Length: 377
Image 1 (cartoon, rainbow, N blue to C red):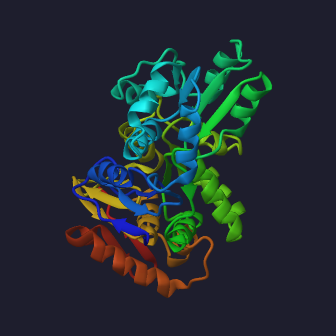
Image 2: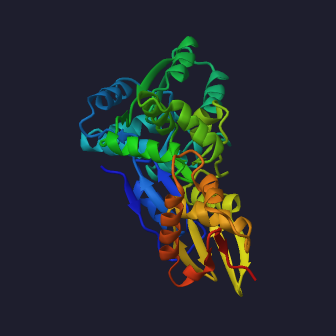
Image 3: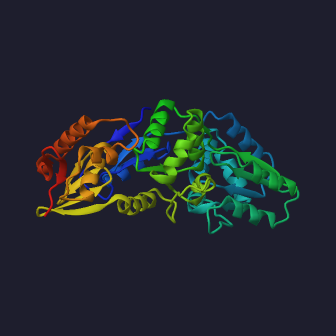
């Protein structure tokens, strides 16, 4: 799957911003929510989920669960639990698995897992206030576990430390790998996403799982871009995660990841809409109009115009001193800080910027032999 650029609709809270989407599951939903608010979206799933129906490891784990009564069952994700129940039903073992879980104490990690368990006709006995797997482990370790059988539904990554802690207390643990992550279908899309991130062509990068972060960091390492990726996420590209657990690989690196209080895609997009505009938004009164700069967009009295990153940098430099003349050398320093270019590049960029502004092109005035200025009151 190639990285795709989705064009935004009418001006919205995220107009002018380019957001990277790394998710495989629910990618279309997240992209739709972002574009509805005006964002441009670069899609590049960094992982894919292996199908369940032919997963022999899942089938074998299910049979182990049915070999003897279970004392505890741990549900860690809603999609994982539903996938497990669905796969068992397809194998003709759905009723047996439901009965085995019915006779056990069911623990759930967060509201999504709780909802999936209830939808399958079961009730949870305990669910921690947070969505932390550590809290489930603490609850279990407070009980006598010697000889107890515990099924742990994994969620994309192995929970080896979780299972080991239970086994040390004498429990028999059946790890259930309901879905597992695999490399992306299109590694080229991931490389292009990395390139746009380190070049600061993205304003934000979204993550819906911790394994996706780990996979992107690993891809950056393989491409020799690890340091540049970390610098970009620390300085200019906002990493936004669906929840605190998802953000942990970034926070462990000291990176300023943000996440909503509720782990929902809608909450993630609302957080982006609240966070990104104040980082770049600037309003400039000009000749009876109000020019608003936001990301790579110019909004002139509500008329939104998408600009190239270079054009936005030129316009932002001019808007910093409306009415004042900036020489071509001034604009070179402002819009080409790390590139080799000459004053002809400035002239070409201004021409493209005027074309993008359309009926508002006259806001940029040429001052012969001196440079350019933004029309002021």
